[in-house]
Image 1: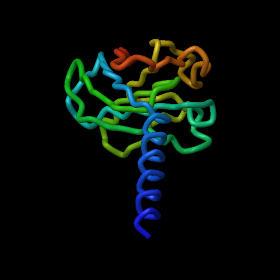
Image 2: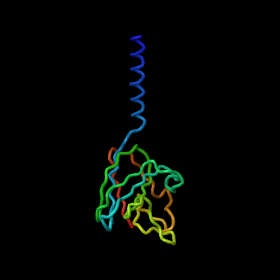
Image 3: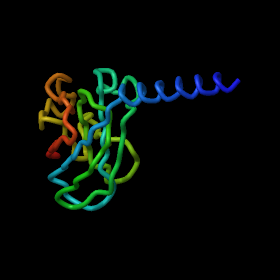
Image 4: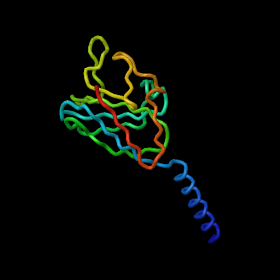
Length: 144
């Protein structure tokens, strides 16, 4: 009986070590600029694939921070990997990007690599994809 308990304990230890090695976390220091007002929140979506980026499936990594006029810096711990960063200023705190009748955003938004498509469509996923592979990664997004 004693040996069974020791064997189970050893197996659990090795499984936990393997689980931690699989999902190595890194820190993304995200600086968001060109914020017009301190009203509302800065909404952040980290997308791992085109489906998450386009909104056809839920984004597993979504964060928000209180808006601050001019600039906000946030530290986010995330598993190492490639992501597209989508940011918008949710001034009215309804957790969605508001659009006008022409389907254009009425709230400021931005993407990683500061790449913009047209006002009515997302930029290509591969143009905004970044690699978070260092212990600490600095990302700057300028809203427009």
